[in-house]
Image (cartoon, rainbow, N blue to C red; front, side, top):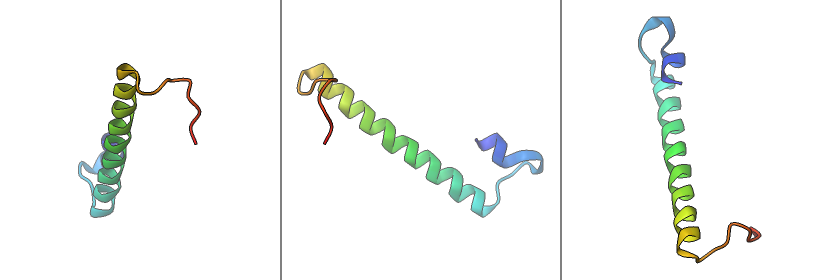
Length: 53
């Protein structure tokens, strides 16, 4: 994504920086949630087959 935003000009403008950082933060948040759920499954607290409300 960084390389696509940077393109031929070789740098990111302020809007592109904000877009890139928002995407990175969102990915980090989703990764943290996935890690938490995986730990719960490994600890036996939840089943991967439980229904989500």
